[in-house]
Image 1 (cartoon, rainbow, N blue to C red):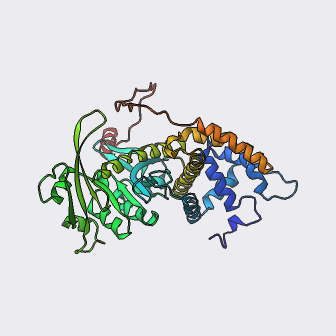
Image 2 (tube, one colour; image 1 turned 135 degrees about the horizontal axis):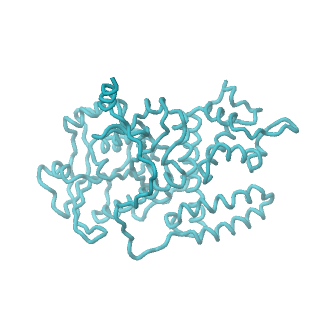
Length: 430
């Protein structure tokens, strides 16, 4: 892939391998600046992999590393991310009674730097009050329900003429799931196009439905509780208009299920599902209950790997940062899964934040270890720290209102002027 790429010659200090290593290191480091990466290159564990002339010191300037990051092809970053996922997913752990891997689908929004190129590619979100200042990218992720490992995400514009929906991105990410894996999604994915493409790629699916869609699939009547009937789901005219690749005679055979359950505060509510799984009906709500894991995984991606806002200045760099950021997340998940296997615990019992702190603390010691005995001793010590990095087991799940305390702001907030306001101001000046 790097043939004829003079920017990454095998003799130069900044090979593609070194650049990818440093970009992943940036995501795992609490500060994560270019300066931190270059200083790690000079004195850290990566130094012995850098080839330089004898006696020639490495510069602490960040310009060469910045240029190398820009010249790194996106295809190479994607290949690295895919290889890491496949190698870490070699021994998948399945849920009891399911017998196959299950991946949780969900979408999120990432903010980007305000540059002309990014504003054009990823237009800021708009509402009745006007446009936002920050460009926004829609991202769709798929995470393993047990291990938390993530396949390479899909993305697109949140607004503008090239805007993409989560359902549209789901068509792409279903191609990346391991063979035979179950796809689980909430009501946003409980539409015919997602169910059809899930079947097209030979994946079983479990999707929650809205009450209105469940009523239509039930012949116009709301499905009563304990409903479990086989249906043939066919596309509507609107489904085919929005998804022209779906043939007119397309259909998906599965089951329509309805349940009446209590929520976290004890209030009764109805849940409707469509699934192609051949499992007892009482297992379906239990499987859907694991969907909450994707919320904590997205929080780890945004907070711990710092993907909530990407500060790159061009669309190409934003995409590389996102791809290698997920690779950095998977490396941390790989450590967690190995520790869980050694301690005979569930990987979801560990705190992602504390696991990342443990890895950052022990990596320099591992880099300086010279014998297998030293590495084994460090591993045992690391496992002891991992054993104390578990999440608390609360009898009652804590609930907080969706409110925030206002932060003091000595300066007024800037607002994006609409065209109408700008025109009025111009007339007033004239």
